[in-house]
Length: 289
Image (tube, rainbow, N blue to C red):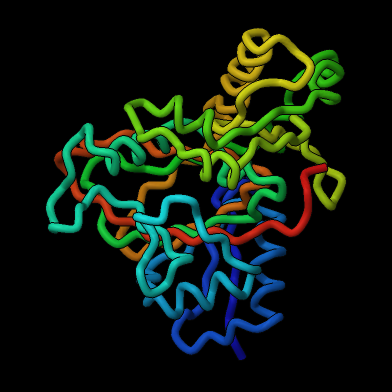
């Protein structure tokens, strides 16, 4: 019998260590049910010492759902296009310069965001497997959007509950902390803005903020006013009491639910310390409600 266990990080229940043997694991419906239920309950799952071969990584992710192919073609694994290499190492094996596009893109992930919210049907979850990590910095921070929404006062809930937010890939790229190449018209057509409720309702009836770096503005509100409100809500919802900081070790696998969390990269010496992470994103199956 396959042994699987879940150990919450703390009494809040946000984040949990999962334990199962990757070698010889059958990625069947039972395994899928285990992971999905754990994600629903804890939002962030950590498996230690899981240095995954590409085939195994893809197989594990596919057990959860269909896989996204991300927009940046140059970062896709050539043999397994669903694997997205998040690294500051160039093709020549050396660390890229601070202002090179590869580094600029990574610095963009230092902002709070939820993956793929610019899609009409955003993703379900993301899997990130650590290959090389810096000695200092480079943690990934996760914020609990359910707990943050639950904690705000009732009068603020009345204000935010009916609001809808326009999420835009073009907007987030344009606001990267560095210059990225402008999107072509074909890319703009392929990734048009998507509008989602600011407050997301989950299958169990719980509610959470749904915003982050791709959130351009609030529908039917002056742009500056809406962006100011989003900034205020982001500051509220990423306070220390809502955040788990994951300090990476090589081989760590972290799976997080993008429907109920925000995340960001903690800055590190991106032009001096090597960091190699491999990512897969699992498609969502429904629009935000």
